[in-house]
Length: 321
Image (cartoon, rainbow, N blue to C red; front, side, top):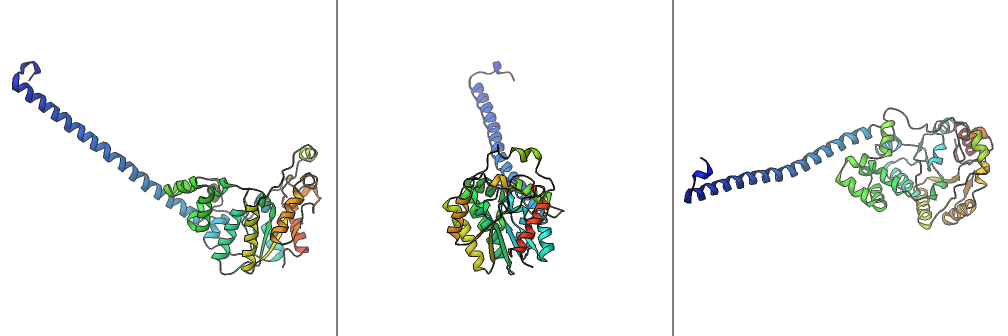
């Protein structure tokens, strides 16, 4: 029936029917939209939790040091701690010359507050306490909330770690609570994948400091060590807690390329503040090695240099058989 054929009441009735149909269609469309939103949210939630579960299982099977720490697979006689300079504690050689098992909790740019949490978690988790904790105190020169947030991969294993992440990177902490997948969005998890089927006890390389770098040392600007009361307290609390657990603690400064450390104007003040706060000796090995072939760069030893340094620590009684 065509619209022009209608008149009077028929026209009114027809228009009413058309409006009713349009209203019904719009209502159905609105209902579909309303259902689509929670359906998408549910799909996101289920997918996120399933993905997080799978990545957690991968993490649990990794040979990465922190995965082993929280999976009860890292019992050791000697704990080692530092930033990238702490990675020069060459574990295979330490175990060779001492006959003791090691665990190196160091990581690139690690701050002391993160190191304190990791060591504390170890001491609370393992019934057998390590004999020794060696800390390269140059890790006390920084705050690093970005790296702390990156350790969200392991936040479900540790209330202390979760609290530190919340305190230092609240947005990342809440994002991790909203999305499990977000907890694995970091370099730390990439390392976890890298060490899925291989040991992580050999981070050192064999490169030797280049002639160009050696020649440029007088021109290059040295990194100045800085420390504040918060960092001092974190170190002091870690030392006291570890000693109360029956662990011998040694504070050391790992070697620098000698011409480089001589340029660090703040060095002696930095070490002095640590000694005063902790009331402990800090063994200064900053200029203990002069063999150029033992350095990878200004701040890091290579494998050859590390072996020489570990022999020196054994001779001085820091390491013991």
